[in-house]
Length: 346
Image (cartoon, rainbow, N blue to C red; front, side, top):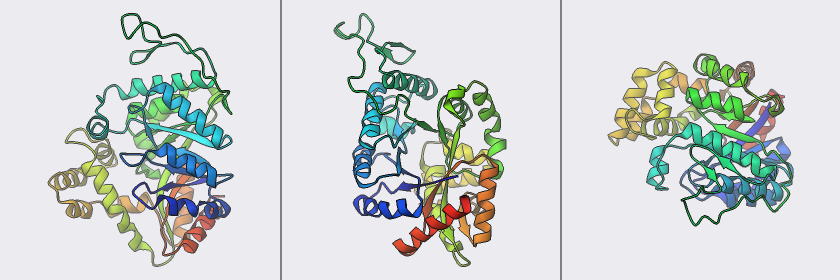
């Protein structure tokens, strides 16, 4: 199993990157850089590429709506070049609040757009003269649109790799099915290994049945807070605000994918209560309603034996990359956590 880590996009970026060489030495395999509605991820990933040597660098995620498919392909090829073939293109649909509110773009047909974006990216990386006729993207623009002067072009540069790995962040049944069919990797959120098969098993099986063997096995990337020791259970509380934000605040009533996931996990009553409180502005009260069982099962927080068992459960459920958030009082202690989880996952 690979060990990954997500960088904090809310501040302290340069300070965090300054420590990445140490994490590399400790055994970290891949780092994920989020974008959300913060600084763009691409400039930050370029900075990481210049400061590291072995570490894979992934966007976690670039929204499919805020850049054209061709620009996503160009960006990925450029990142793969400056990192000497260490880039992973993480894509996702984000949500209507961000896409329509921050980018001013209609949030329509996320599944079909994801498929078309992936297909266009791979044509660009193969340096094909770019023509594409999809429901949402047509290249070049058809007659009657634009000036009529557009013509098929191919990427000027020769990419380091003709197929850059694509990871899709997905939790909905149809989106997970599409991911299992088309992408090299799948990144769910709030992953609970004991419930994964019941929630996503059918979707994964349906997608894998149509999967091109050349894509290899699907890389399943699970996220987990990491703290090892006999007195670390208090660190679970750090997960409450984020869980409440997503389950309660990332979307409106009836249009919140994370709330839907909590319900599918069996926390229907809690999910409704969290959302009601959060949308009323009662964020602390909403966080208090996040079930402790959920926090425990999607974490690696506890004594070494507990963490070892959780790693085994993740592996048994099909996880191939653990994306951890090491929590400790010092940089040295966080490095030790990466070394230990590397050992336990080895």
